[in-house]
Image (cartoon, rainbow, N blue to C red; front, side, top):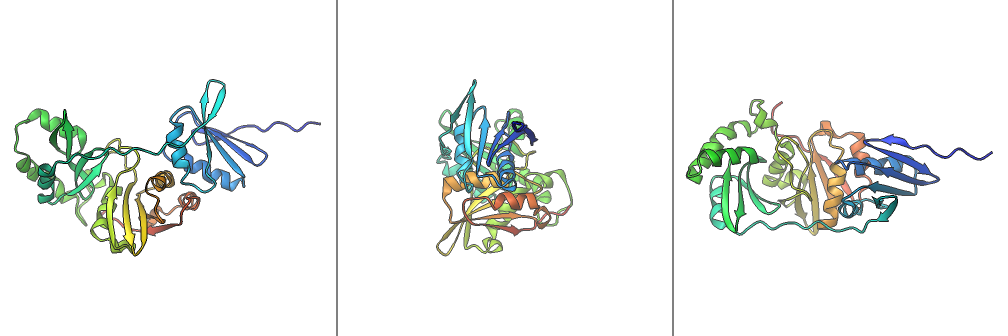
Amino acid sequence: MAAEPPEPTALGNGSSLIIGNVGWVYTPERKRGFLGTAVVWAERNELDTLNLIVDDHSASLAAVAAGFQDSPVIWEAQGTELHAAEPVPAAMPVAPETDEFVSVLVEAGLEVVADHGVWIGELNGLEVARIGLIHGTPTIDLGVGAYDQFASAAIDPDRDPAEALRMIIGLVAPHRRAGSEPHPMGRLVRSRWLRAQAVRNPSLLGLDSLHPVPLLEARPGLQEDQPAAALGAVRDDEVLVVFAVGLDLGVSETAAGLIGLHEPTRVIVAMPSRDHHDRIRSSLDRLSVPVDLIALEGEWAG
């Protein structure tokens, strides 16, 4: 009697199928963390090969997958056919040369971070200013995040940038300092706040130096706390550091993509100790370079 064909089962927002020692996973919508989830699923089922099928953006996903051990094979569905994806590394836009505006942010005491073609002025990781180009001319936008910046510019387009920046910092700073009382502004983008702590004091992670680097994709907004990243050095090692807060199942996927871009000798993932979940540990263990999960507690209260 012939054996029954295997049945697909649900996996996250997709479905999975095991044929022999080969796993197949399909996701109709790529979400952060799905690749790491699939990698852990393959390991737990002791599979020899993992195939991941997507409908689009297969080349960028293949570049991320290369950061895992036994890299998953990425396929793109085109009608009834599957096409193997070739990894295409991410291209990072370069922030413009605008020394005059950058000096305004530095003199105001902000952390100045190059991020996907713009300079961002941050106060303990929270964006309060942004420098970019409009038709080749440098512009400075002030406010907490892009929406506030747009509204502020529309209301008062002729304001003095230095004076307006001092006012914004005065409003934000009480909520973005160590031990400040709980406040909505203190809860935003805490991964970037954690990064700011470590950049000021790299020895917290056993490093000699540390500077911020952008993620592969621009942050969608302040409400979504994605990981933050930095490159550090200690002796002859170049270390990629990924910061995350909360049960972030996408942290291994973030690290995998940045491994391909920066080629570090090892990775540190820094998270508050309460967020060191087994599922996160399992996915980090599958990265292609050695990784240390380190407890780094946030300065915030509550």
